[in-house]
Structure formats: C-alpha cells, structure tokens
Length: 207
Image 1 (cartoon, rainbow, N blue to C red):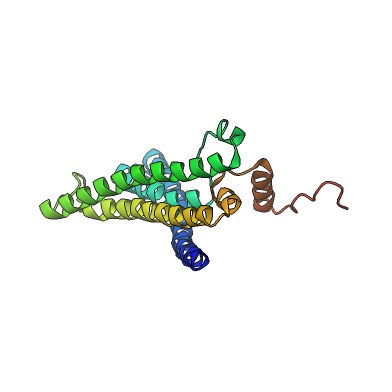
Image 2: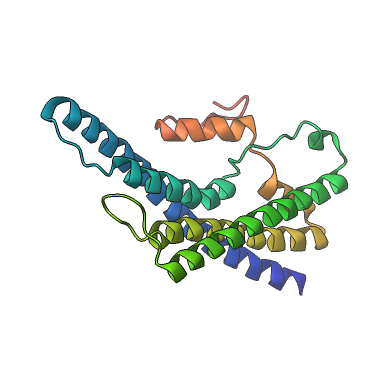
C-alpha cells in the first residue's frame, strides 16, 4: 500500500517540479530582459535624450515575479540556503525527522505568503487598482503572476512533504534524506563542470 502511495506522490511531485523548472527558466530570461531594458534606458537617456518613462515600473514587476517564479525550481535543486552544521552530527532517525520538520516549517511560511498574496490580488481586483504611473498597469496582473509563483512553491513543498514522509514511514529514510539534504561539494562541483561543458570528475583510482 505504501509503495503505491509513494509512487503516486512521486509522480505528482515530479509534475509540479517540471512546471517549476519551466517557471524557473522563464524567471531567468525575465532577469535578462530586465538587464537589457535597464541598459537600453540608460544609454537612450545619455546619448539620445529620451526615456521609456516606465523602466522602474516594468523592471520592478519583472524582478518581483521572477523571484517568486524561481522559488519552486530552487527548492527542487536543493539550492536554498540551509545551516546544517548540527543536523549532520545527529543519528539517522533524528535526521530524518528534522528534514521533515524543516519542510513543515517551510510549508507554514510559504502558506502564509500564499494566503497574503491571494488576499492582495483579490483586493486589487475588487477595487480595480492600477499603478500610479504612465502605463497605469492593473495591479492584479503583476500581483497575480507573483502570487502564482508563491502558490507553486507552496504546492511543491506539500508534494515533497507527502512523498518523503511516506518514504520515512516505509523505512526508506535514506532515500528521503537524499531528496532533502543540502547538496554535497561533489554535487556542486559536478554542476559547475556540467555548466562549462567539462567532463564530470572520475572516482578516485579510476583511469
């Protein structure tokens, strides 16, 4: 029974993580567009004497939704900052529980953010709020994109919590720890080598 539940939870987590990966790449390209837009506006003002007059507004939206949209993919890659000096010294059974507890705490925080984001978007829709700018952007649009990113982050946390709780209950705590533990130096080094197109490091003694 547990094995079927674990499989279902893993599939669901994989679907959410895949969507989060797409959102993460969109967020990354959004930051690049933001940088080009700021650069263009600075050059245009300096050499051509004109400005878009909306740089601050648009780049602010891009940064806000980009950060929110990258949260889920960052969690999938275990790239969020964690202080693990103590947990690495604890017995395995306690470590498993602490990993799950960290997800519970993160879920509570993300749920609080998601509820606040939802309330903010509904309030903007109710009052038809717009930005005080040249574009008069309806605030529900950028706020909605931002809230969607936070909601996906919250959903992924719940999916990971369910999957890894089931793994621990099934006596497969080491698998749960591999899913949740911070990345090792070897994993980070392999990621850097992959990014630059270098071959991965060979095990000691390999030829």
